[in-house]
Image (cartoon, rainbow, N blue to C red; front, side, top):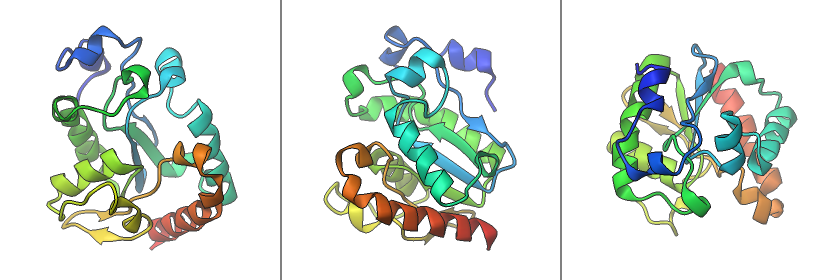
Length: 185
């Protein structure tokens, strides 16, 4: 596993030039569930803390609604630095940064990998050799269980998507309820 200092000194891609912090994963290092988001937002970058911005409020509401306590989770990002103007990550940034996520997965060794959103799910599917999918096909994967040799993979919508599509909140509650049930099985 990498050290905090190694992460803070990372220059593997150009995002080191625009970041305030490199956001390290946080939570229970013995958790059964690992939530994998895309990248820290602007507020997370400034505060050096996961999920404190608008999408964090939605995530905490989902956790509260489904009685998932934060001590059941380890939360991290595919990309450890904020993306300028919240743009999409470049493939070169994903390749450069995914080494850290890989080390986190190995160290935490959760039962369930729950990627949040398209890019985190795409990376996890590629890593564990599942068929590729398009952006258009991604919604069909949400809330379904995929078994790798080592993990159950349970793609979820990123809470940020609910900022624009609140009508999917009740389906997200159902999916987070399934996530909790998976962790208990």
